[in-house]
Image 1 (cartoon, helix red, strand yellow):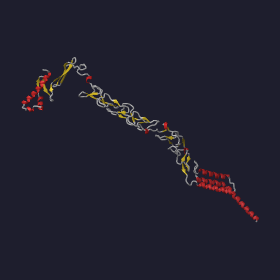
Image 2: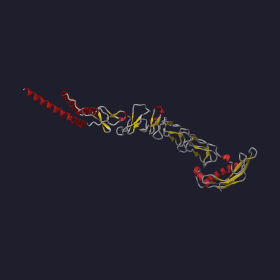
Image 3: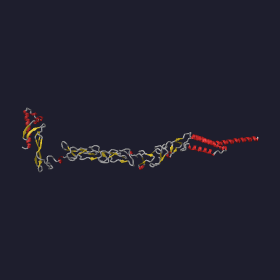
Image 4: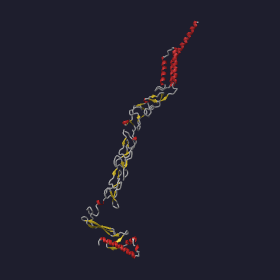
Length: 424
């Protein structure tokens, strides 16, 4: 009887013994099946053709198991190399094992039980399984897969290594399945970036996924890093935009704020706003009140011309500003002119040649008053005082000649009266 025949015999014999015992216990034959028969077989214990026969609580037979190793030329000889007793839980080697690669030993060589690259060995089953997404597996006997580092990704299962993120993208978290495009205002100039870099000052990027920010050009800057639009480009403070020449230094006497607008005047300086966009001729004013800070060509109230040196028409200077003439400001001049005309008429009728000094004083006063009435650019027109001063000068210069004239006229009248008496 061979080994397999002995096991088959003992199995059939175990069923017969269990059924017989249940019949002796008075069980109806129809009840001897299923759970009732299984419970009776678990209690069996006898010596059979294959050896000691007994069962555990699961219904498995306690027995001795042998490990057969095929050896020899072409693996033709079956050699018992180890045995295991389920009753005593004892395992022992009886002979050396011969493995498929020809090596001899109790344990298999690593290459026979190691996993290939892209696979990992599960802890309990020791089976090789494909590496999950977002991870890489180098193979071998490594128990667990490894997550992709930041800046790399693994989009498929069974990856033996992770792929660095291409330029213009990034992977912030470890174990990423894909890379994310760099947002606007940033750049990804290198592969494998964990985060994208903000555009430096003077650069901008309006779209996502860029590997390099765009330069503003023309020496322009941006107010902050990470600009997303070309409209953020502007000239820095102390410079201004000069067409194709770009941002150039601010001329002395002018102030250039940050932006693309023209320069502005500083206090005490003046520049013509009608010159070319780049070349400014800056003049220094008398003070910062006549040329206040602000737009090019700005003057204080009522002033105009180069360096705000002149008053506007119908204005007169009053400190740093020019005030507008009022309607009654010319009345004293008119009265003075009428007075002078009357004096000149009196002199012509009297055929008297007054002192040239008096005439010169009158002419000087008249000319001075005319030139300072709302047309003179720089003399202060104190009209009432001026008229009074000229009048006093004129009358004082005429006082002695008039007295002589009146005396001569009196003498002539007396002589004429005496002549008339003598004739009578």
